[in-house]
Length: 507
Ligand SMILES: [Zn+2]
Image (cartoon, rainbow, N blue to C red; front, side, top):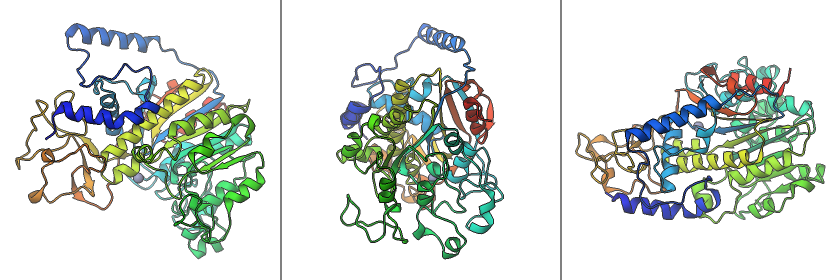
């Protein structure tokens, strides 16, 4: 069992490089040990009154939105929001429980029902389609309605649904997508692609029958998107989907592209966009001058970009989510008609699937940092900002840990004295109902004797599964700016699209 002071100190030291370039401001100077800032009746009453005044002062903004930015934390359910907030606060040396994360500052909130057309618990394909195109559809398909048949190109082809991004391009607005997952992954793909199978990110993943029926892979659909002048900003991972299987990756000599058709989509894009910039690392990305660049394609890894924890540890060779967001807004805001931008923290989901809460929480912090970067750049009088998730995970915050107990630690009350389960062993506050962290109950390792705050620590779970699963509980959507007040009550996920479209005044 680690003592609180050394644990907190250690986490602060580890976090220092991350915080140096991404701390939400204004933040008070970090202190080594957090103490709850409010510990009297008077203090709570005063804080409650201040919060009431903030709620009363907020007046609906019924203007038309020129711009819409939608942030999606993939797999960021409510327990992730809460644990992420506590983690972020504790990393800053503050009281985690009462800490106010950037997302918490958005004034309007709705609960969102995430079930898909055919599943109680959805995957990211139908949920992203609901968010950006306004219809619920089947698990596994993207940009097509519920009439689609998964894996069947010909049967699905007639049922394309139009995304807000296509509508924006058709009206002369600028569009952009940013994701830490592959840029062809389900969530960003829903903005531009129509496929009967979300795994068709590259032609090599497609069955011959689908190709013969005239279907194209997601990467190619991004490049051949028939709306306006195409996406102005595309930043994420997935480089292997854009270069031939015979071609070496520019960054990793031992890796190659994945395209079976021999096409070099990155090179074709560069040739077709002489005033655009194609970049694949942080330095070339940083060198792009938005004023002189018409379009920006950034593919920073062969597959997904790194988790935030690994990115900073590996020497910042990829831009952060906040850096990508900042540059995307600088690029898109040149368009006087406005823009629509999606920013996805795509790997919160992947860390959860691995039963690894720490990476999930660190990527949640990265989303807060990116949101802050956006809110510092835009005018909320004309820009609607929405922050939501596509679905939850089976991730829990358990037990009765004392206030201030490290969120990644074992349940302790008082701090430093682990609470014991019926097997006389400790247990972590964070856990999963299923996944790779499952343990044989009789041989359960004692977390109180382990470093549960280590980067690679896997929280224990009950049901053994290779990959921890999504959860079917509601997520939240939070918003600020024009029409943000329509985010209220409990809404269907596809209604998010309708609110954003109404805010933009698209008929
Ligand atoms: Zn997932």
